[in-house]
Length: 417
Ligand SMILES: NC(=O)c1ccc[n+]([C@@H]2O[C@H](COP(=O)([O-])OP(=O)(O)OC[C@H]3O[C@@H](n4cnc5c(N)ncnc54)[C@H](OP(=O)(O)O)[C@@H]3O)[C@@H](O)[C@H]2O)c1
Image (cartoon, rainbow, N blue to C red):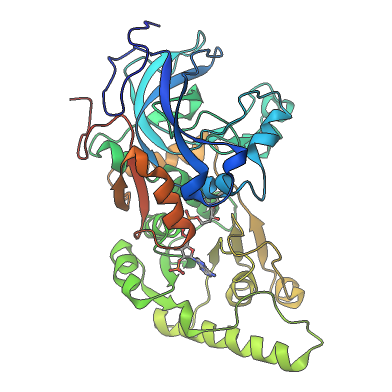
């Protein structure tokens, strides 16, 4: 590892293989927890140069923006800094960022899959390879050691350098700019696992798939993955001006959720009047879905993440033998289920969380093959990383996914050239 300058300015690309002593980072500290615009601040910190045998240090060219660092900025539902202190972390801060494109600058002593100078994107699944369940051959996402890099772990992509496990690095699609490449991996790999990993309820040719938040990060990737697998995506959004975006990605049609008002936890089944009103709303939503499809077919898979607001309807409209798959509870965690629909129609409610190497690489291959549009809504500067999270927390972000330039000096660059 060659040490040349003590610190490089943002946008000033250090030579391949060079690691400065210090780096700029967008840092969250507990005393700033709250609104994302206030929680992040640019600080100069020591570059994490100590690498374990299977780790790598990547120079971040661009970072993708995700919802998880809104949670980190708020310090809830988990204070990620305190949680890490229990595991021995003494930094007292959080450097978030769970998506990146960049260049490998250094590798640990046992790394054979990567070389200094490799251009990569990074998936955010980390785990202890010596964990008993991993060595026993179980899916590492089930391991107790599983962590989301740049959320549960420190040293994420909102800094000039990021420390990762080598297996997280995947080849960057050459046809994409740094900012396009940085944008889709977290949401895309998550969506890929949700739609393909839960056999027998994986997307099959001709399956109808209902996708909440079709113009958001997860939703825009889910529409395209379903399209590629031969399914029929139908998107739910909150205004008609988002319909064209979803349809261009492959949605057969869209539903405006603002046309309905039965959202949230279900009324108790003994409250005939309130329950009847809820059931009417759910039936009307189901009828709208058939109208959009042009046939009376129910979704084999419902792709959910809003959670509390939407789960009762997702379970209601899902086909007999179908699956509601969920990876978040953005609107709340008390998802209510009328068990009669679940058992009589033998539906499945399946939790899903990020991805393993196979899921992430399968998604990345679709990106490299040019089959997935990264849906980069807008590109921001390094200093605007707090703003991007504020916009997202207020639902004011552009359609698709956001990215911020870190070491890339300008938009449009596809390599170090
Ligand atoms: N477990 C995991 O591995 C994992 C991975 C990725 C993301 N997540 C989580 O998944 C959630 C979504 O992430 P994202 O990146 O897709 O966020 P996003 O880009 O902000 O998209 C979320 C979409 O949800 C829709 N929405 C908002 N409120 C809603 C409501 N009350 N009912 C129905 N839909 C609503 C919005 O679309 P409309 O307003 O147009 O309906 C929005 O576009 C976040 O909580 C994130 O942390 C979890």
